[in-house]
Every structure is written in C-alpha cells, then in structure tokens.
Image 1 (cartoon, helix red, strand yellow):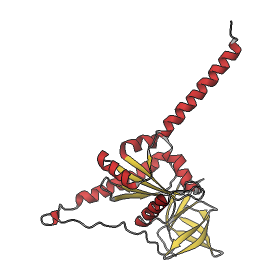
Image 2: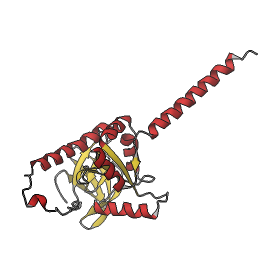
Image 3: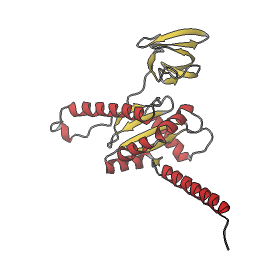
Length: 253
C-alpha cells in the first residue's frame, strides 16, 4: 500500500513542530529552580556557596513584577547566571490564588524582616544569610539587572573585607544577629530616573512610576497618592492633592 506524500509530509512537520515546542517548554521549566521555603534555600546556598535571591512579588496582579519576570527571570542569559550564582526564592503575595496558611505566614514574616514597602522588591543574601544587595524592576533586561546586583555585591564584599579581623576574646564571642535596616522614607523626593527617553521611569521614595501612572508613596509614617505626569532629564512633574509639583533629583519637598 502506497502512502500519499501530500498527507505524510505535513503530518511529519506538525509532529516535529509539536515535539520541538514540548522540548522548549521542558527546557524553560528547568531553567531556574524556584523555592518557596527560604530556610531550605539558604541551606542549599551554604552547601553550594551561592547567594540567595528573595523575589517579593505579587505574581498575579503586580504589573512591574510580571515585567521583571518576563524581561529578566525568564530570559536565558539570566538563567545561566542564576544556575551558577543564585538560589531563587519566590515570596509571593497573590490576589487571585490561595497560598497555604503556613506559606502566607512565612511570606509575611520575610516581608517584615526585610521591611518590604512595595513590589517587586529583590533582596540578595550571601551564603551566610546576610543581606548584601537590594533591587527591583529596572529596564534593560538581564544584563542591567545583573550589573546592578553584582555592583552592590562587590561593594558589600569590599566593605566586609576592609573590616579588621576580630581578636580574642572578641573572635570567640557570639555576635548578635543584626536586623536589616528599615527602609525609612522622609519627605517626598526623586531618588532616580532610568530608562530610555521614550520609556523613562522615576523612583519617587519607595515607588517606581512611568508617565501617567499613579501610586501610593510612603512619606514618613503615612502614604500619599501621587500621579507622575511628566519625567524630564533631572526632574519629574507630579500631581499631589490636585496640585502640580516638580521634584528635582537630590531635592526634597
């Protein structure tokens, strides 16, 4: 019985395409191993001499969190870096999916320990559990994110190396645990401007905003609603309580 090539070839093509898609999906799913238990992650980091990345995220509602995941964490370049240097932990605060009671409590405790004020927030720990870097969403993809984190890590390592060695009996005394410094925000101020001219982002106190976006910004012990109207080279125009204000880099209201 002779088979019709017109039917065989398209069928083979469909099979090959399907098999290729399955292979790609499997490779992507294995690209980065994510933990949800920070204690297990830290133990793995100690054994493998790696750093721990804590990703504080709202996975199903936070737009900037989703962009960080798609533009950085899901990219092959970052996966290669992470496999050699990081143990990844997702600390999720979803709106539309349920977490276990234990997981919710653990995530809330981590957010309190590291004084998380907004999402996404990235905390980097060394293999001993000490915080050595803090980051969030920024444009530029994996390379910009990796450069930002590693520059902070190098600085933290340089500071640690410059400290004089403890002498006895100091060396034998148990050092108390040092809590992470709280993120304190005073008056409304422009912390930084990043991104290309056609897609700038402004960091105002604890929030990153694009033009036309609104958010609750922490000022002292309260939060105020502001709208980012326009981002300039070294300043930003915002709307607060119906009034337009200009914030300049390095200045406070």
